[in-house]
Image 1: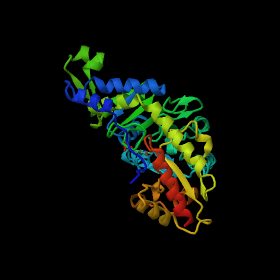
Image 2: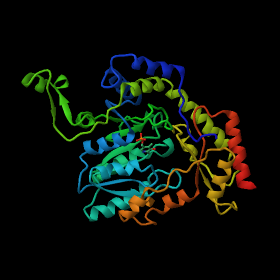
Image 3: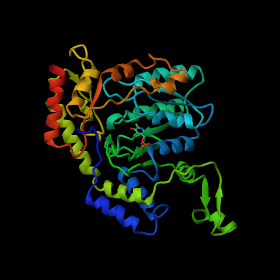
Image 4: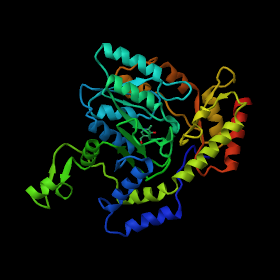
Amino acid sequence: MIPYGRQNISEEDISAVIDILKSDFLTQGPTVAQFEKKIANKVGSNFSVAVNSATSALHLACLALGVREGDEVWTSAVTFVASANCALYCGARVDFLDIDPDTYNISIEGLLDKLSAAKKNNSIPKVIIPVHFAGHSCDMEALHGLSKLYGFKILEDASHAMGGTYKGMAIGSCLYSDITVFSFHPVKIITTGEGGVATTNNLEYYEKMLSLRQHGIVKAASNEEIRLRAGEWDYEQRSLGFNYRMTDIQAALGISQLLRLDSFISKRKAIALGYQNALTDFPIGLPNALGLENSSWHLYVIRLKLDVISKSRREVFDCMRSKGVGVNVHYKPVYLHPYYQNLGFQKGLCPMAEAFYESALSLPIHPYLSAIDQATVIDELQKALFT
Ligand SMILES: *Cc1c(COP(=O)(O)O)cnc(C)c1O
């Protein structure tokens, strides 16, 4: 099976991990801090906090932004469930934004309508979580403008978007947001096995996330006041935190992977361009070409023109899978999952998101997809659509 996404592990990655296994610290050593510095340097943020998953990073980010019971958080309907679950972990309510049919990111016009309705009901969300779908940035300048006007905070779910850019700046710089989260799951752009990171320019958010990552504890070693008052050994649990730590083993893999980020992105771009050129005459919608230069191309999602082809998405999907092409579907609108249906969300909430889901198909894209494999994908897609 040609997978839709796959990690790339080099000999250098392997020796970086082995070095840590032979060192004094498997966790809570110096390597996590080194990884955090390199991430912050790469994306141009002041701070970064590495944790055991992007899901954990989203949870800590919501807590740092003060999300709690009685609050509302809005995110895109077309995303992985973690973008919404993080609000529920904090006891807040979640609601969903419909997508722009060109970019598959949240629709700014739709958001504007929802905000003006919310203003009348006094229910402006505390936080909005835009998701950079497939690695294409949302319209952050517009979102930032609205955040000033309506008074909400912005948490970017950039799980797909490490290495992507927006208006010449790396995604993660937080120029237009409060916190940005990246995932290092193996199908994402770079991997630590499991892992995630939150970047921010705000010292208070940084310190909160750092402390909540390890049980809500503040240590004397990093706090002069405790050190002088109590002693070098002391630590204080000041809030109810978690064990969301990243290991040094993972951080070493992350540092080594980060060295190849630029080459991963240029290979993904070349593959996207290859699809873009080969598929122009197919009865499908292609990703917005405006994203070509700036996207990290985590996913390559096409939309089947179901009224033109005489097949269902299910038939095209099954046909390609049976030929060894690992197509996939990203994503079912979050609120259509049984858990969210049980919370009372109704079908029809986000019509664009639902229409997108009916026709979307993710083609394989990853840095080491060979030219031969890509040609096979294109060939099998043609057969699936036309025969
Ligand atoms: C992968 C992903 C996550 C969760 O990442 P983990 O590191 O697996 O927790 C969150 N949001 C989006 C959009 C994702 O694609």
